[in-house]
Image 1 (cartoon, rainbow, N blue to C red):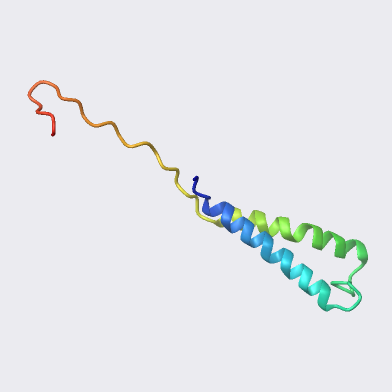
Image 2: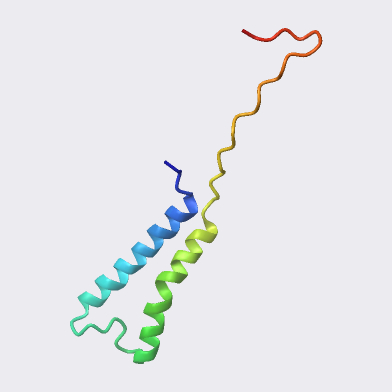
Length: 85
């Protein structure tokens, strides 16, 4: 099974956290308006851009997981070299 990169894990966690936060805040406010004092178009823009922006930033700042490489070839026996048993 392939290892999931830290960048992917961080991005997924950030997107989930912001999505849950927006959902909970929207549910707590009785009429479904998350930011009642802001115009509707700005509310939509913030809730639309928030989760992808958090996902992008988490992926950008998370460390890269190095890929595993194949094991190096063992040395071959040549002149004066005794092969290991």
